[in-house]
Length: 48
Image (tube, rainbow, N blue to C red; front, side, top):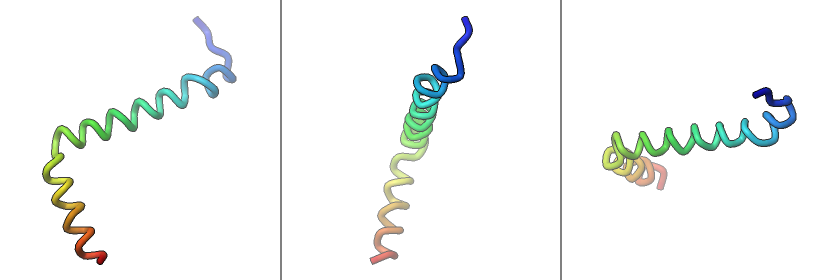
């Protein structure tokens, strides 16, 4: 199977990027959901 550069750019590249972002977000959520939410709350309080 060979993909032309156009097919790669139009279809697979965005899918790979979205999949990577979703996977990273999910991993972060699994590993430290509570820690992250607490950290975000603290950051929000500091900004206000």
